[in-house]
Amino acid sequence: LLNRIYRLAIDFEKQTWWIEKQSKLELLGSESQGQKPVDPKNPQPASGFNIADKYGTKPRELPGGVVFDGVLTEKDGLLRSGMVYVHFFPSGYAEQSVVYLNKQGVETGGYSLYIRPANGKIEVFNRRVQSFEDTKRQ
Image (tube, rainbow, N blue to C red; front, side, top):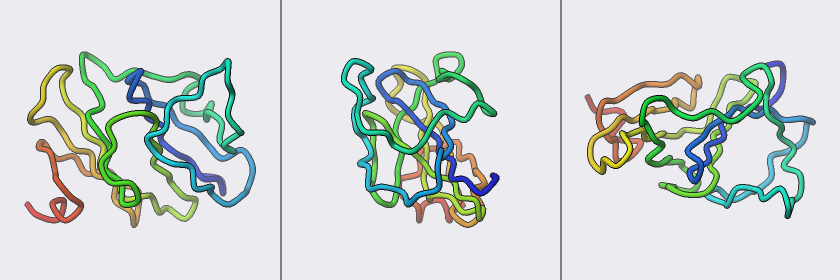
């Protein structure tokens, strides 16, 4: 990851995602998750992150009627609106998170993508895991 922090950015309002990388080496701020997307007419202070061209140059939608149904983080709990970020660090560590995916308009079922903190690898569950403890049960 070239000594930079990367993050997965998810915009719940537009149902899009993209990858950002830290543009300069600095400590992560205490930006709040679930915040509203930035309005170009009313810019906010710079976050220190920019879209990572290596992984795409614009936000992407999920395919075929699949939507983001929430993100569970240790710091903020379950988030289902605004902007959410999951950070990946140069050491290989990642923020422990669960990204929930579902079909548009469906309230039950779906998939859970568990991001393991020790190595950043993703484990897919074909059910909604309710907590991080639930990822340890088979």
